[in-house]
Amino acid sequence: MKRCALKIATILLCAIACGESNPVAPTDLASARTAAGTEVFDGVGRVVWVTNNADVGPGSLRAAVEEANGDAAVRGIRFAPSITGQIEPRSQIVYDGAQPLTVEGPAHIVTLGAPGVGLLFRVRSALTLRGFGVEDANKVGLGIMVQADAVGEVRVDLERMGFLGVYSHAVWITDQDVPESDPTGFSDAGSPASLRVRLHRVRVTNTAFEPGDDGVRISEGGAGDLHVTIDSSVVQWSGGGVNLDERGDGDLIVAASHSVVEHIAWRLGAPSESALVLKEAGAGDIDCRLRGVDIYENTDDGLEIEEVGAGDVTLVLSDITIDANGGRAISIIEDADGAGTGDVSVDFVDVAARTNALESLASAVVHRAAWNCGSVAAKSARMRAQDLSCPSRAKAASPPRSE
Image (tube, rainbow, N blue to C red; front, top):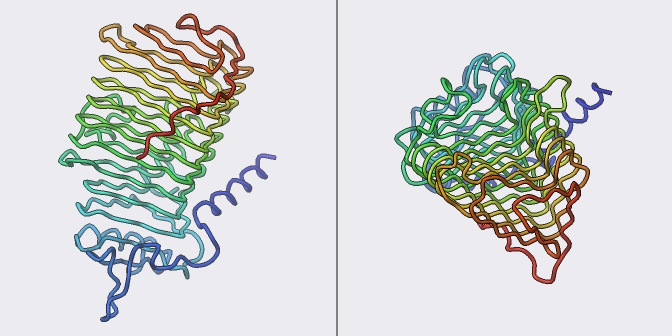
């Protein structure tokens, strides 16, 4: 049964990463050929092609990344459709250029031989990764670290990607200065830049084997906001779920739709973990809007929100199912340290929370709470009913914030 499940997961990984069977057209990389025959990227740079699955040497992924490191004119790295088999780097592949970069598959990368972070991107500008999978990493599968001198807003887009069998975090995105010496991400140090992340059709399966690891971890330290958009994505059968952490001053703004987080920390002996965790530790608000999201059969809370210091919590849920979790369906802690002030506003439409081990909705240390749950109204800051059903109403909840 286990072998069958892993085989199915491998097929899903390939399906997510590779997309359609037809080769990806050059226009998908926003590239075009000039009259002279040189491929340019987005009208301002050029594309480097990965033409084989070797670890080193001309045409390898490592060589393409090294070329991008040394030449700011390189704006795209693209895998040739003719590549077959796996790419198996035996040591870390590191991008540390200053220019925006897009890397596009299809490709299947196995980083078992690379210690630490298998694929590491140190970025100061926009990064787009599209159409490839990472499997069997010894530690972190994909690490994206915003550098301390980044300013303004850094955008990271992950599209049609799959992660399978990664020992630690499958995806780790951070703008903190010391992530490798502070792997828990509790430092509030970081760049002054805001971080905007989008996950589209990303699948994470069977990852995060160490306590405290997550399928997806995104941390923002220093000044700046953290914006996260997740759509059509799945995190499943992993030691940790999705952890979004705004450590410094700034807002945490989350919009998720048509996604699933399930069977988190279900391995025998694994510590209980909440499925979707949102934390804001400095001066700033949490704004979370979920639509069409299913969270079920996880070992702790389904949705955990914790806001420390000055700031409010806004939670808007529409067409949500949170079932059979080992803790609460939803846990909200506003002003967790008791030192700040803030409000909690909750708006539920078509929300079902059933057969969770503890009360469906719990909120602690709330100064002022406004609840709107269809025809179900909370009379206090704690709803003790194990089953919560918020039916439809004529006026739908506000849509997720556009990113």
